[in-house]
Amino acid sequence: MAGGRMIHPALYSAYKSLVHRHWLRVVFFVLMFSLFVSCQIVWATAMRGNVYQASSKKYSAKQWIKNGEAKYKRAKFERAVKAFNKSIACYPHYFEAWDGLGNALYCLGKYDMAVQAYDKSLGINPDNSATLVNKGIVLYKKGDSEEALKLYDAALKLDTKLAAAWYNKGVVLIALGRNKEALQAFEKAIEVNPKEDLAWHGKGYILILSEKYDDALQLFSKAVQVDSKRGWAWNNMGITLDKLNMYNEAVKAFDKAIEINPKSARAWHNKANALYNLGKYEESMKIYNKAYELDPRLYAGKN
Image 1 (cartoon, rainbow, N blue to C red):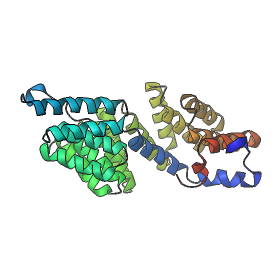
Image 2 (cartoon, rainbow, N blue to C red):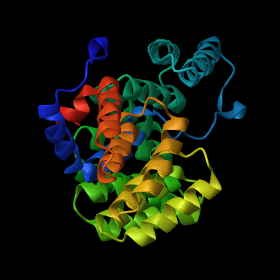
Image 3 (tube, one colour):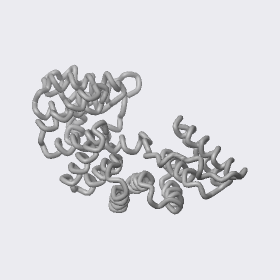
Image 4 (spheres, rainbow, N blue to C red):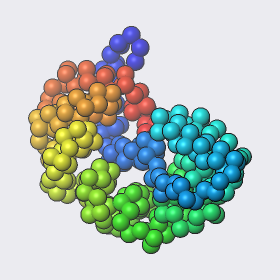
């Protein structure tokens, strides 16, 4: 909203009701956003020196792999792609080069090419559970939930304690409408790794969806006790408190979420909802404007 213009009063209730009706969808989008945008790909087993024979081409390939991984960690994905491709050009039989290439291509949104790279890496090492998970993430992003689920199950057969596989399986099960199984998957991820933020987020979403607001509130309270910087937990706690008609407490929770991430349009919007429910219409109007400035799509129904 350029120039700080206010939302026209005639549109005020329309904006509020549009996203208020889709608050579950908003929570689920955050869940998906965490999965796809962060590029927190599961990395495969690190290279072992004794795997590499002494030769100039293999040595060069190994060095390019290290270069690619360094670029990837610094979020320089295009440069990482170039480095991994140079490694493959030197010696095309290193699993790590193809796997790293797949990770970098995924983060650039080149999903078809990422799948091809993962297929190459799995051709070299078909039993790498991390790569199976990563390929599943890409397939899910492409809309192939069933195939993604098969890959997660294959990864879990190899390693039942891979928290990332359990979490991503839960996300796919939600998309398939199998919420009870999704809850079990998230609980398994938490059991394997109690600090797995996204699994806590997923479980909370299922509890909210099931209208188990008291249980959801306990979960989010526990999450912020484990780590008070979990902005998603404060935001979802606020949503839960709002559903329980505890609007003042909800505002405080949203304020915490905003303190952690001032650019979270959803946290600002949710705070505006709670203020509206408290009858603070003028104040809520200002907050809706702030949310709109941060992300106009929130009110265009695109998210």
